[in-house]
Image (cartoon, rainbow, N blue to C red; front, side, top):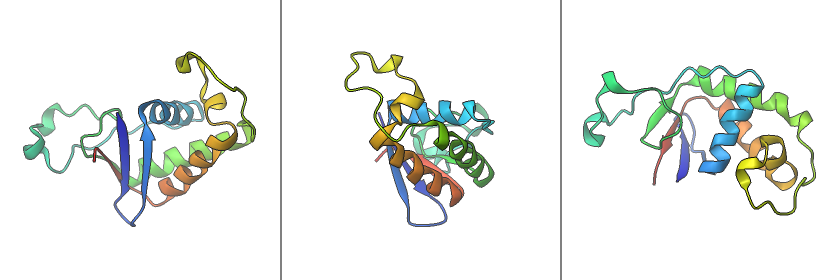
Length: 131
């Protein structure tokens, strides 16, 4: 599954694989982010969702909304992690990516993706989409 994130205040987008997205959320939580939960997608009738059943998930790509305060809080939490993430790769190859911590995953070249996402979060609210 691919997560396409689209800013609601600027023409800016980010893209994450499921593995990357789950690790971003995990890293943010580790550094103090307290998820507010996503808001129901604005096109609920088209997608077949009913607002009263929306669970606030970040792990689907149904067009749900991450509100500004939540996005900025996630960005601040992730920013705290940068000093702890090495600038060099910690692994060459891992047979089981599930055993790699977010610190290892975002080390080296992947760290820039995290830096870019922090800047994206500063823009405020965004949608989690499938394209």
